[in-house]
Image 1 (cartoon, rainbow, N blue to C red):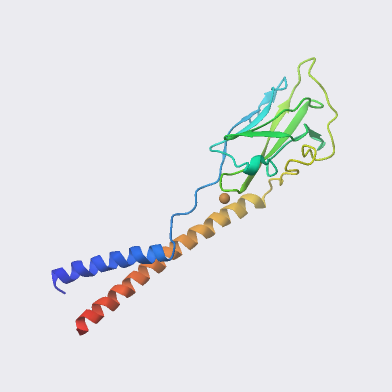
Image 2: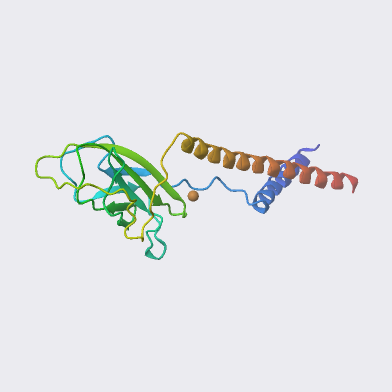
Length: 204
Ligand SMILES: [Cu+2]
């Protein structure tokens, strides 16, 4: 093949790749979900006094469509499984806060939280802290019912378990496979179009 023919073929191949890519709607994998940046209390910490509010802060804006906090939840549970707080959350920018007026007996507590990412998908996780109250801290017996802010907030957060991370990584794996597969398909299509065009030109 002459040099100009080669460069022409290369140009056609690249053009075909761009066209095939846009036709098949190929784009990079979607933006990742919000993730935890900081919390009050922090994971693994020991509290001797109640903070004015508990807080979950993520890396980006959270989604409250029409001001709804229905997909949000913040649960504080003791070792027995009792809940503390009413589950009424305030969402502002990247943060969700909740006031917990009292905790129960000293010991390990679990925070289970769920927020709604900017793309509308819920993200949830859990962590523990230790409650070692100083004298005079308010005490509550907690509740056996899931706090849902009188029916206006999210209710029970899915418990993190062994299958959850696996499912998440499988999902990521599948979307990568689709993306790579789409790219390979586009490349194949580009080569096929190039060969077809070159073949026609040689027949002319
Ligand atoms: Cu999402």
